[in-house]
Amino acid sequence: MKRTGLFFTYFQGERLKDFPGALDGILDKENVSYYDAVYDRRDGLYYLEPVAEETLLKVHSREMVAAVKLTGDYESAMYSAAGTIQAAREIRQGKIDNAFVFTSFGDHHAGRNFYGGMCYFNGAALAIATLREKGVKRFAIVDTDCHHANGTRDIFLTDDDVLHVCFCCQDYSDEHNNIDVAIPNRTSDEEYLARLRQEFIPRVTAFKPEYIFWEFGYDATQGEYGDKGLSRDSHLGMARLIKEAADRVCRGRLITILCGGSGRAVAAYTIPRIIDTLAELGRYR
Ligand SMILES: [Zn+2]
Ligand SMILES: [Zn+2]
Image: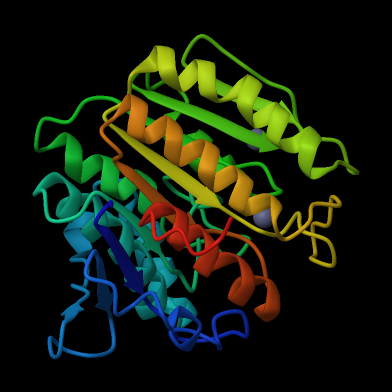
């Protein structure tokens, strides 16, 4: 079984209201570690460490960090990125194999000098910046949120050591390993998973990253604000494919980051299933 770290922040909004309660039957597993921004170290809980401003400046401009402070969302944005940064560190130190990061604010619309779309800091980019300082060189980011990852693309546009495969509405690729896979406005689970299998798996296998980051947005699920017709079970299929690739390509080093999606019921249904897959608990078939 894999050792899976769960990195939890919850400050506002509806979607995570059922957590951590929805993780009943998962949190007590020996191979699952739970890191929380709210509670200090006690009874098997680990403290989620805040991120220093100098770390944010490894990716984002001083002006942007200052602007985020003025929004009133700084603390929750900072802790959202903190989960991904700490997940990367715990994996590198061999304490866990993979991770699921709960966020209040996401990642992929945050660029070097801009933010928007409920994204302030780019946790994946910050984690990559900190891993690089420890000698890690190659990374892959797969993005199954409904929308284009303009922030992540801004940060890694000319970076040859980051493979970025974004499943969105555009169709773009360049020589710096930036790929967009156009998903039509109406699709099906089978079609989407086939695209993921065709467009991501061969590329990540050839690229040989040392870590894979999965920007997991569920906003293309039926009834969500980016509804493309996917069922809530589609994300379990994606998790299985991406985890299998990580196990084969980079010793299982996979960090799953909660990105878009607003529904509380979809979150409570989908996220435990993804974590079950990461930790190989085998409760769902
Ligand atoms: Zn989105
Ligand atoms: Zn895209």
